[in-house]
Length: 417
Picture 1 (cartoon, rainbow, N blue to C red):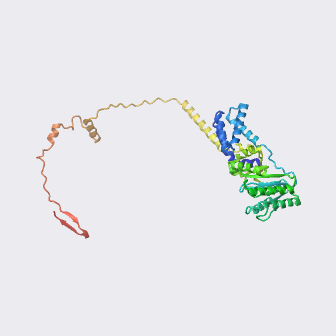
Picture 2: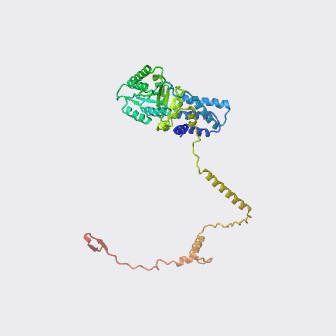
Picture 3: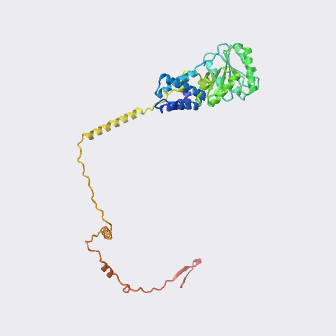
């Protein structure tokens, strides 16, 4: 995997968060207006670019659109990419020309200082330089053992003291060993510290005085390691360390696991600090030198998205179906037209609902259809057929039945009332 591929893969989450949403937003507009610029600025702020930098980018984009007379919203993505690349331009190389040169690595706890030192040592050794490490972080538990593991992975020597030793003494011994062995680069680890910890900042000043005394005029880089996942907090850390420790460059780690990679822009534009390296993975070779053009290309790259392979087959099926539909339509047009089938109209006359009609309907349902006048007794006949109450037979009185009662314990007794 090439350098650009590593950067593009490491910036996937940031690209989806910033450029992906910007692309969707731009495609939803049919013209360039003030609403487009407002939504663009909002998306940049949400991508941890920061309000001042987001305002600057949209202002530059307005000027470019006005100068070039751009009216198509899709064309502003290229201009936006050029503006970002221009902001990130700067001195992003390590100045380690003297022999030996010193690289001092500082930062707060948990940002990846020790891991960065191991990856940087392996990279410089791969470039043909002889490297020696100094374990000057004597404050954190297991820091020396962790750096020792990375020294073995990178194949470089390590100078260490016991836990709780004076860090300046460790740096002194490391410089002396570098002079004796003819090493090109000295990389010193330091304890994680905050800018407001006076004792630790004084300790850092003591280390700087030892380096100036033992290697006067040597090239020295003070690299601040920042965790990209902290977003705008990383910018605040860089601002405070810049005034207290004289930082010469930034190493931005853990870019592969966060969508907040836009923090690179305010670090460069607001603070004027150059990003020297970016961490895009956990492997030894995943610490990549920062390239402004490659970073902008990877941030706004849309060519890496896979295209589904079934799309041509689907198009062919749709084309075949369309051809079959056309052939069927042609056959129907060539066939002679059939004579229209006359529609049957049922003529029904609504008849009022009466007793006679209802009686006829009931008799027809029962299977009989009496002729007119038959089956309909006259009122006189119906009255004569009814028997009088005197003619009705008298019912004979029947004896009363005995009631049975059920008694407990299974006994029965008949009782007459």
